[in-house]
Length: 414
Image (cartoon, rainbow, N blue to C red; front, side, top):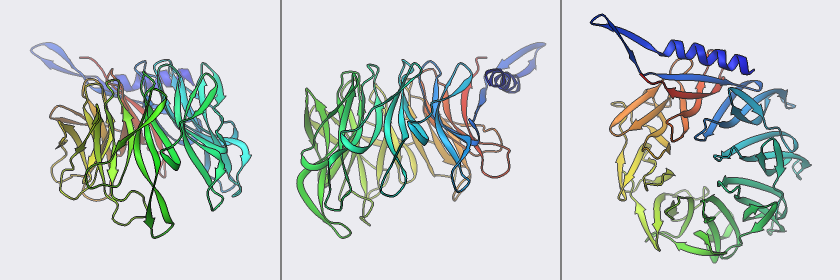
């Protein structure tokens, strides 16, 4: 497998480097090289994250299939030119979520246990130097890992022992460290969830308060607020003016928090419109949408405080709270930014033509937009970029039917 990957990389490099003859000399132009990371024996795969060492994680189909004939997917780590199957916790499938600079990977994997519906029960896991560690739960059947820092601290959400009035699971935000999972609690309501952690161990997420609102589908429902877990306790970050609920999704090393605030929150509400926010030093400010009345959502931020995401189906960068639409192909506005590195390079996806796709992996830097070529045709998408400028995502292949492969784009020097 490693020899095959290196062979593919070599062919891609030869195909991507272009030479032009000028004045009797040869000028070599820098080009983007695409490397097919392959699969675990099945038809498709997708890359979701990359660290600065070029280690890539994602999900890939295996040769195994479920009872309906669909391929079973496993989390993978692509390292040193080969794809490593991270396995499961005894069940059929798994997924990778995040990787740190130490090469530690977190994800979620099916266990041998099954729920009342007969489906496998999943737990968060940590892959550390070849060892797969079950993070366990807070007493309930299920847990999900969401983020990891360089100290190996993991955050997410887990079911607790208590059940709701319908017999369903109640989830609390957790911090896992040193082999133990800690319950971060709530603001007096039933549930909470953690979304990110920085190197200082500060955690952000959302937690239910004691306040309730009426939901036409489920009746009274707890109102959630964004939280910052700091110094061993939850701090309520509040909501934007005129909004009822909020949730925090990311935090950087400067303590800058981004998230969303809405009135009301929840997919059951037909008039759900979320607005992105940033919070720092006790103050929450709106990340304005491109168009009044439309939504906005923040998907990534860097240590310089640059935030990217989407608004009104457009990829957006926020500068001093003001939305700036990233350049798109004329007449083709739909797209979304998914990640930004410390250089300010942004990656995402955009439509090639009006309507629903095909999609193209895109990179923005300053006022320049670059479309990254796929393995076949134009369809693909970029998920993440590291500080070395390497990009990962997915691309259609030439195989019959929809078969996408995880890919790595690297800019070759001139």
